Length: 496
Image (cartoon, rainbow, N blue to C red; front, side, top):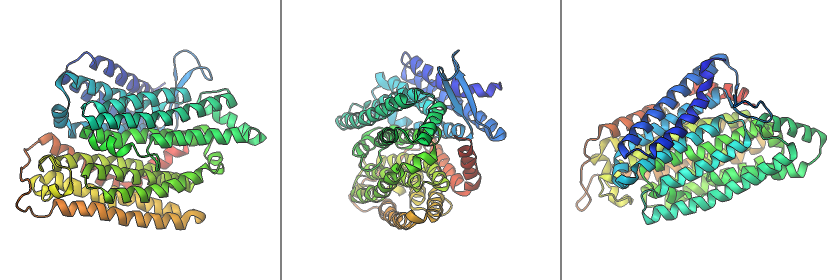
């Protein structure tokens, strides 16, 4: 076996051990360890990506001494390796963009606990990406939930604690439904490894037995993960969780946590249930309806907001709706568009959150739009970065958001029954995106008048470099979309 095939297992264990070690370190030591671990995980994921793209195959890594179907496995190909690399890059940039805020907003004696949560979050995301065992996926879903709650409430502000409680309640509801679905699925198939479950489900469908329990199981699993990923109308916890946590936490929560659950759902669609069976279950039509509803309602909520961070948070509801709409199309093109949008949204939303905090810092820490007047002149780097993120969300060519919307439109053209509603909602949502994002851009570039805060930003090289990296990443996704979509197609072809 090639040594590089050990890297997925090493990555998960490295992040978990880093969390344990960070618990006994001071803040600075925990920060250095976390930076090293996230960087090393990114390098190992890059090595696995290069290897799997070159071979074009999917690999199984057996955990321990017990072979399938009793043992535990990791399974990975080009899609999983690329997603792990992307998660590591976004996490590193999100942390770098909010380093100063972490020092200011978190008590010194609790700073190391923040990095404990970050390392646990990284390990859980990697496990969700790589695992081939359904119960292991559930265990790391819970680890992901706990670490995310810790990241929200660690500042100990009243609104953050309230947001964490709301997030925990909704997330536990989703986890409960997901666990019930796993239990019924285990009762039907007698397996927990995804490939063995899939074989059993194919036999059940072919025999025509247990059709109702199977449909209930699919619905429970999908609804559970939809709640955890904030699909409309299960999004009530999201604005406070993203709007009041530290900037690094908000960037990671919006870009990584929800995407980890969505990627797990993609694995279940292909590797557990089988995409043809999933499409015929009609659950996919429900996802389409809720997806297009989220695209509109999330944008309308964002328009009504006067707080820049809550506006960005509601925008995430709309963007998650895009992803589920792509699932609902039930085609290969729709899946490719959704996976590309996972990348686009992760890169852009982190950029928006990090740049927004740069704008509020030079506006007396005010988040309301009126006080942000002229903020782009006081912090030029943040102003340019926010504008780039806004243009991407609107769908201007050369940025990643344009490619996402183009892929969704092309996918809708292949699905005649859903083509008209998908294209109409895509157009309406784009217009709504223009309203609230361009309104913000105009506001921050409006010349300053008497009575507005005029504190100029202190030069922070790490913050500026982070914004530049986010902008470059966004432009690369927009300008080099062809090889990225080819990678997604290659990954999906061997995914099952």
